[in-house]
Image 1 (tube, rainbow, N blue to C red):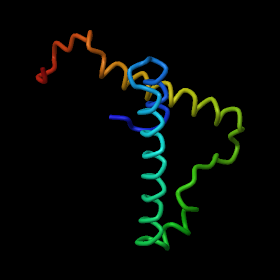
Image 2 (image 1 turned 180 degrees about the vertical axis):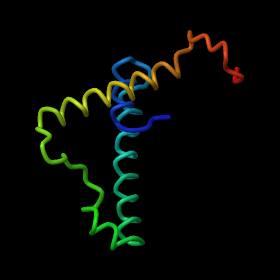
Image 3 (image 1 turned 120 degrees about the vertical axis):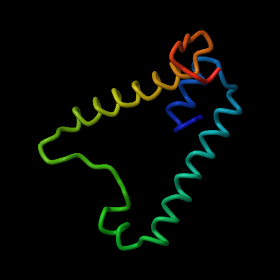
Length: 98
């Protein structure tokens, strides 16, 4: 599954998906996020306002550099996990899924 545009971009760089398909996936992912925010705002407007629309922010005492580094590391772990899980050469000895 293409979880977010970072995963799709990684698969594009690895040539596992075509440019046209990658762009279409990224557009669909962003449109899905916009629709999701619309649903939350429509059905949970009090929580939407209380939590700032779900926008991420840094905790007090955390610098922007640390925030960027955390995002880079988190994105790397996500993309690495997707690549590892979808590797056709992977030998999953403990897996019951063929």
